[in-house]
Each structure stands twice: as C-alpha cells, then as structure tokens.
Length: 245
Ligand SMILES: Nc1nc2c(ncn2[C@@H]2O[C@H](COP(=O)(O)OP(=O)(O)O)[C@@H](O)[C@H]2O)c(=O)[nH]1
Ligand SMILES: [Mg+2]
Image 1 (spheres, rainbow, N blue to C red):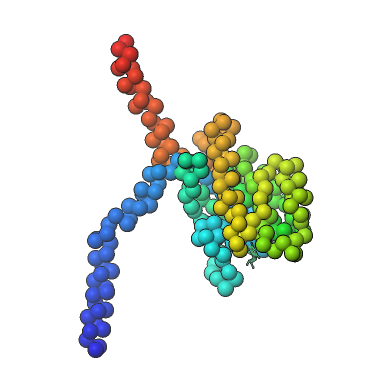
Image 2: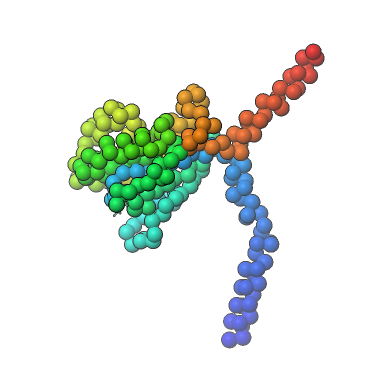
C-alpha cells in the first residue's frame, strides 16, 4: 500500500510539472482579455469605517458577501471587466484597507481617480453626517472631474434605518452626485453602482467633457480603443484610392 501511495505521489508531481506545458493557452487568457478592453478606469471606495466598503468591493468582484469570519488582511485592490453599452471597461478599484479608521486616507490614494463610490450606512446618521468631509477631500485631492456615486449601504437593515431615502437623494442632488441605496449583503444595486458610475464617465468621454489623455484623469485607453484610434488612418487609404486624384 505504501508503495502505491509513493507512486501516486510521484505521478502527482509529474502532472504538476507537465500541466503548464500541456495547456499553455491558460497563460494567454489575461492577454486576450486586455485585447478587448476599451478603457481602464481607476475607482475609489470612500466613506467612514464600518459602512461596508470592503464588503461592497468583495460583493462586486466575487458576487458573494464577505462575512466577518473571513478576517484576512483587508483587500486593498480589486479589478473587474464590465460591459457598458457595448464598451468593455476594466475597473481598477482601490479600497482604503482600514486607513479611514485613523482618519489618514492619503493623498496618493486619491490621486488620479476617475470615479468613486462614496459610502454611508443607512442605519448610522454619524456616517451620513461625515459625507461633507469626504466630499471636500475627494474634490480637492482626486481628479477635478471625478464622478461620484453616493451609496446608502445596508439597505437590507431597513428596520434600523436612521437616514431616509428622500433626505439622502436631496443631498445627492445638491452636490451633483448620483445616488443608490445598496446592500453588500444581498447584492442589491452593488453592480449597478459601479456600472452607473462607469457609464457616466463614458458619456463624459464621448461628449468631450473628459479627456482621457489629460494627466491624472484616472482613465487609460485599452488595446481595443487604441486599435480604433489608429484605424481611421487605415480606412482613409482606400478612400483616397477610390477618389483617384
Ligand atoms: N446587514 C448588512 N451588513 C453589512 C453590509 N455591508 C457590510 N456589512 C457589515 O458591516 C460591517 C463593516 O463592513 P466592512 O466592509 O468591513 O466596512 P468598511 O470598514 O467600510 O470596509 C461588517 O460587519 C459587515 O458584515 C450590508 O449591506 N448589510
Ligand atoms: Mg474596509
């Protein structure tokens, strides 16, 4: 019996060695993904500690609720490709990873962000009252054209609500923010928050209000967009021949 275990063990090692050689295409998947991306946006998640920022990020990326037993080091970063009106956008999302607990969210965290989720907890007026401070910081330290969506999180705890939908939507309107109530627990409106924010940025790029090539815009062209930018020169050539002049 020990002999068969030993043989199996050896075979397992052999498989581990040969596997990448047998299936080399796995390593190309990420390259292929980049091939289809139109834009890359840097996103932030800001708001008081305990409002559910890390859970929102986890729900968006993993599509599941990050329960408290999962006490690994705070995820500081996540990325996901979404399709917005036929365009593939890679969101590169930064989480404060606990910096906000010490009121020490750094300048470099804000630098060059295209979009942000500003999160408060609907069951805590204190977190809602802190929104003005967060907004001032974001407008001062991030890109001037940063697109912000206000997220009233923990929508599932409606019985303990301290901030009404109406009150928050008025605040959003006054401060030119988009607004949604979300639940990182049930997943309600989580994807929508990120997608709506990305859609607004795309609209601004299309209308010329935002210039992706400006330094610190938080926007980069993906391979697909770069191909489109280069293609007009190629399409002009046949026209010139048709014209015959
Ligand atoms: N009921 C409920 N609890 C939530 C929700 N989002 C986060 N929480 C809880 O709120 C606490 C703080 O969440 P966390 O993501 O660590 O907040 P952060 O400090 O803003 O990153 C945790 O105990 C979460 O389980 C939600 O949508 N609903
Ligand atoms: Mg956190």
